[in-house]
Length: 386
Image 1 (cartoon, helix red, strand yellow):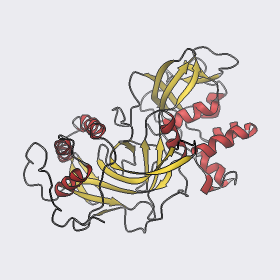
Image 2 (cartoon, rainbow, N blue to C red; image 1 turned 90 degrees about the vertical axis):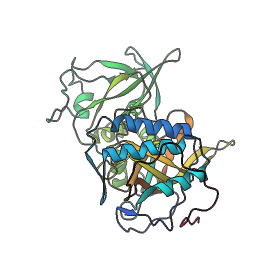
Image 3 (cartoon, helix red, strand yellow; image 1 turned 180 degrees about the vertical axis):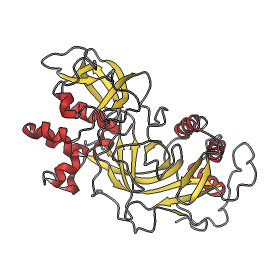
Image 4 (cartoon, helix red, strand yellow; image 1 turned 90 degrees about the horizontal axis):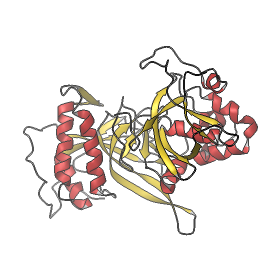
């Protein structure tokens, strides 16, 4: 789960958008460019994960996309049809034409006209099975007295760090660095790497029920880091450079995450594995869980020289996660998987973007025929490329 990305008010690239409403229909005479820059297998995999979750929901349940209301059954039908359109691994332009011909699009213009896109990943942190002078930071399992659905707030972060848990929770492992463990909580899942390169995965188990409070906003308000400079990288560097203030700042966020052992890749709020580059965290009050969307933004990458460059991201994605800082129509958090490039995106990505939700056409009168749509050899009627 993306429990809380480091969101700020100052994206580093792209110009702002004029606010015109949270979700609005896109004109069929002027559709956006929908050229997917990634691979079809990853998209099929992500769609199937959404279908797994949606098929377990009441099929007559209503999903609200602004003023457009869709049943779960209709959403399942849309995703199944999208799999049909992908079955012959179409080129990006052919898939674009098929989607525009078969579905409607709704554009999110974000909060005050701004759509902020960040990234998260599966961190890898050094750990040990037993406590020592080097490994002294506990990574706690779920306390035995923390009942699912508990209404009363549990111990605060400060109380837990002061030892108030007692023997109610057993550490899964011990880490070197409290900053690593704090960011593991923010990401919601990760890999623990033990001496000898043995690894185990851990995932979200529960929280203490306390509200998430952003330490990034705390440091911005205190004038410690300018808003335009805030990022995961800047936050980590500040914490490392100011050990005398580290405890105070980390304890500002009373929310605390407990972990469980995991045998799979990170799992989002739908309870299904996340797909790197395809799964996103959004606010489910605005973008229904499991829904298909298209995103346009930028992401960082490492140049051969070791410097950081930026490249476009234009692809279909699925809302399969949620997060404490991911609220409203102007926030999207992209899951990038694991490894150095994923960590770079999670650290530095703070971009403006465009976000389109794919919904059934208002006049779906009959079940579409199975199989892919016909290949498009010309420009479809009403389709204007920029």
